[in-house]
Length: 249
Image 1 (tube, one colour):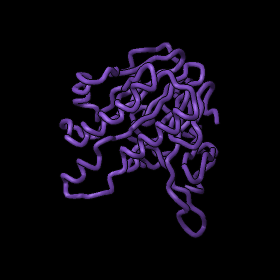
Image 2: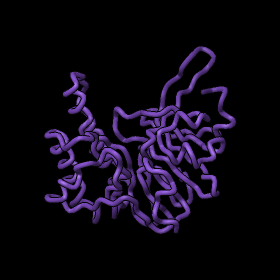
Image 3: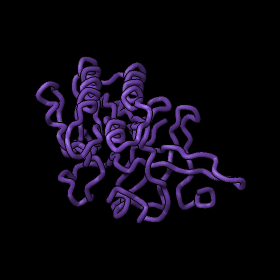
Image 4: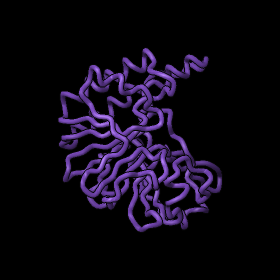
């Protein structure tokens, strides 16, 4: 499915592919989440790493990739680099780097201490990334803090968007989704779902106060936003714009 001109979903995975540039983009892997939860006394199954590696492997088998871009929150811990977090991040980079020409992390609000891994692994860390007409940011900073203005399509994560569908009986389910829409200046944007298994995140509504990203809070035309559910069991399912969808939310 093409979400925007030149921007495709890879199979039924929470990642996109810029075919002309041979770029794979994903966001919010939050490697290390289980370790931090365990330190707080909350023990959950540790399969975040396995999920990330599985999605990467399937994507690389399906499309020809020159460059992988992680659009922020590659890691989870704010206050350091945990032992398990370091090991798991290293596993992801060890897997990726021999298979593509470049790995770039667009810095997110959780990516403190990530530069420590650059001592061992040749990947790049940037605050924003302009690739042709596409600008990739994490999404945690206001739009007016973006340095580049030579873009047509803005791609970002941070929001972990999900949508809850209901019928007359009750809730059908909660699904991660892409958000496709326009900014107030008329340019297009695409919000990426979280890849992390435990980051199903923010509920999508027309109430600006419910959003995490200042871009969605302040600059998006919310009524025109189209959610596109992405689920490995349900598949891809494009919903009407939010303005037409309130009765089911």
